[in-house]
Image (cartoon, rainbow, N blue to C red; front, side):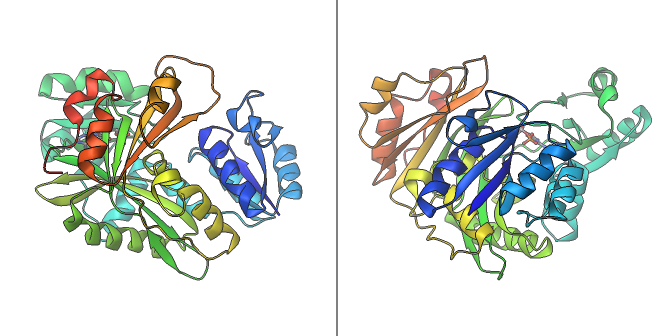
Length: 370
Ligand code: AMP
């Protein structure tokens, strides 16, 4: 059997690496001739909206999935007419629009930060009055890793922020959340409605980019709430595959920030830190194989390598360290790889992490009682 993956980045690459032991082969569709998944899977080079490429992909594979959510909705709709597609195109469409996403959360009774749609300067001013400042103005579509966002601290910031982003309307204004931490849940559902959940992950971002994740997050009081919220989304969307939802924790409550209808950066630790990786489980769900155990193996820290890889001998010298080079040329800020450290207890994990965490993140090490 063969799986088609639209998008040939690192997520497709790690999906392909998880597919082979299951007896699945992969074809990735990507416009770039050097897409990094092409090093480990068959690459179909072409545009995501090229009907000839889509038809070739649909003929070549048994099912299709995605490695990023900004695949044109028309592509997903075109493919689903010919071949099973997971997750469902509706999930992709909703996740492409921050307003649709927040409206879905609201409809399902999932708490979110306050938000308002903004299409004009007058609407921005009115939204700032309702939400209060500070607030964050975001593009509704095609924003990722903190791109397309402006922080509004005071009324004087409103017009400059509008001037910066007006070319990218529609926009959304969200209340700024003074969060205690950021966490995510990785949830799975198959076609029969079986679900599985990995434990909550604590995520540390800088300038909107995930720098490192720690699993399992020790705040187990939030686990039930996160599972309940994720279950509502999985059921509402007849979801198949892995779904990630990112939350802010504020005053001990979860506020949903966004969801990703795909395997997720905050789940890379599952390759070594869980009985079944998120990549394998996404494929199991999509192909109707029984879901694998999401039990953790000790505790894990996953650190992203941005711009360039961490020094390989230094990382590999640490006990239970696992190195993942995505085979991408280095470029400032680019996610070129990650490494995962595993340990039997949080204290040991902290000690191992201390020597490898970039200096600017030293203050984000786990608190001693974590
Ligand atoms: P996003 O692209 O929405 O995931 O935002 C990237 C990061 O910016 C988040 O992980 C947070 O660290 C920060 N951020 C986004 N929205 C808010 C908000 N409403 N309040 C506080 N921080 C936010």
